[in-house]
Length: 321
Image 1 (tube, rainbow, N blue to C red):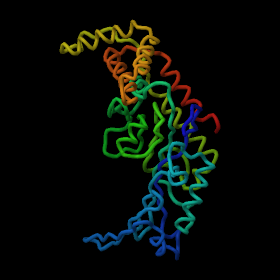
Image 2 (image 1 turned 90 degrees about the horizontal axis):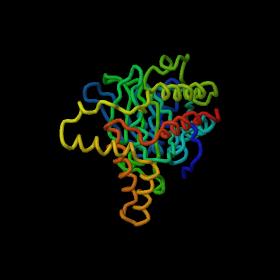
Image 3 (image 1 turned 90 degrees about the vertical axis):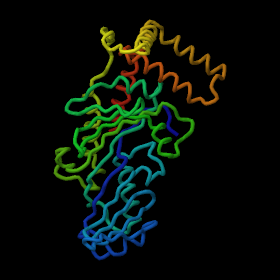
Image 4 (image 1 turned 45 degrees about the horizontal axis):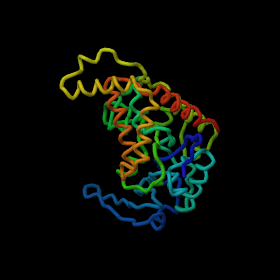
């Protein structure tokens, strides 16, 4: 269970490439260790590939080598609530080597997801609404519960994602602890040319276990977050944005919210809970998110403490490095 403590940022999903020359004579036997292994033949080239999985990791075997893609925390612990640090990453790689009966330390890392889940005081949408622009990256508002920063092209070597982990798990029909609420996920996704992106000579599987590299990843993760502008100012000229009666109504409500003590809003939500108004407890969070959404249309801040809380969580995600 996730408890209210500082979360340590770490590795989640990785992409590994293991060249056939590293494996040697054991290469033909690897397919025997996969679950649900299937052969696929390219009609044009005649190349045969084997696809399968091993405890949730996807494995693809071709003539030149094999790729392994998936969440190392899930592989090691059965869940990615907690990411892997340098020590637990070593444990996951050792388990993978045992499962495939080969050495994986010299595998090339071609993709990394580095992040953490943060148990927040308020609904995730309230924090996301305050994240503004990021230098050199486009901001994509996927939904009220998801924001992504990345490039414009199809290739996305760098992506910075913020989203509601519980909502995401529900969409993907993934099991997550039922008593969790307000679980904000922030992750950095790096794909391709990792040595160039991170200014290091190489990124092997063993590199993930090195203290210096782990510290470098934590700093990169934190610096990327703090480069994002935060929306804390009240917009004064909103009349030009009113196009319909509904827009005008939302601005009026937003102004009333701005004049209301935040404790009164919390008090109203508590009254609803005590009266048992909603059968589904998630509706209280949805209502609070809706209030924030309306307020945000006029860029009115309900609480200045939200960004400070998130800032502190990100700062302390590297407290144990």
